[in-house]
Length: 392
Ligand SMILES: *Cc1c(COP(=O)(O)O)cnc(C)c1O
Image 1 (spheres, rainbow, N blue to C red):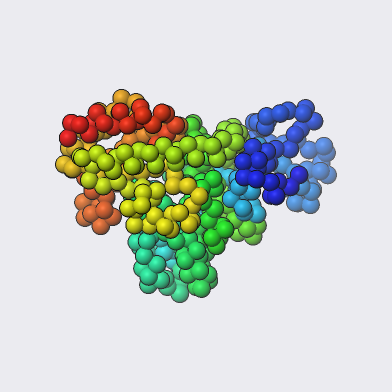
Image 2: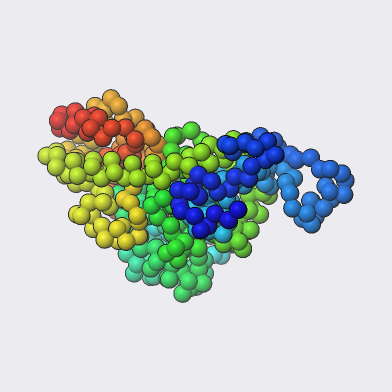
């Protein structure tokens, strides 16, 4: 059945599931490393790729394929390749599309391990990266070199919720024969579909909102057939394939994605307005606030403002830690995209390995607190934060 004409939530619940002869209602988990052939000739035909079908779960697996088909249609892409983690998705994309001598222009506001991958590991293989301000198209343009093959961005960014204009970056990439990859971890296809704005590839850490309940690591890359064929080649050869069990968890996660993302966004918006009114809060970063410098772009590019926000308290690190240490409901952890709200102090955790000067350049200040707003009652989250804010 072709689901592409049906609505988003219908596809999120139904796409990718091919009922087996058992007639199961919920998607089965094919927990098997290899697959059996009817005879030697069939085995030979499968290996020669003359006959479609499964061989080994590093190559393909029916549960993983169901997840890939479901996410591909949600992102509006022709094909998806699932990976063992979000970082495996980024690594496989780079290995598939780049070679020694190539150059990446990347947002400087990136997940920490992505920065390490680009700076510490890809450089060993002759691939250089220039980091730029994600909000400044002119900075991207100036950083492009003849050998630039990839533009890489997260939008909105973590923890400051800075936005990049996907359509502008896509045009810029294509003018220079480069590709644009968007890490869509924070919005998910429920709130933002980068391929519709001209991006070539969408990357996911499924670990976050696609699961939505903090259980499994996984990742994915979505795009057109030819590019994804290359990415799949890397995964099946190098090994970081998604486990069928995790694919099943993510399939179930996708069924509630739209509902959850709207609930996360609604609570985050309420909390952002509430925090904005607290006397000890100096600043709130949330794209849904009219005061956000890119509020209009967010309203245009996204269909919701997401569950992630950050705020700056008066009194630096001491005050920020006081707010964090006073919480009783919210979890103190750096993870995000969970039904359980999480709180973290970026300057001493996710961005703790950067120098003070680097943090200053990125506006990661000592008083900054990041919140991933979960699905608890928003009044309980306000009360949890109010306790610490009153101590400042
Ligand atoms: C968590 C995260 C990743 C990495 O994903 P893993 O599943 O932890 O490997 C990449 N990008 C963003 C934006 C993330 O938040």
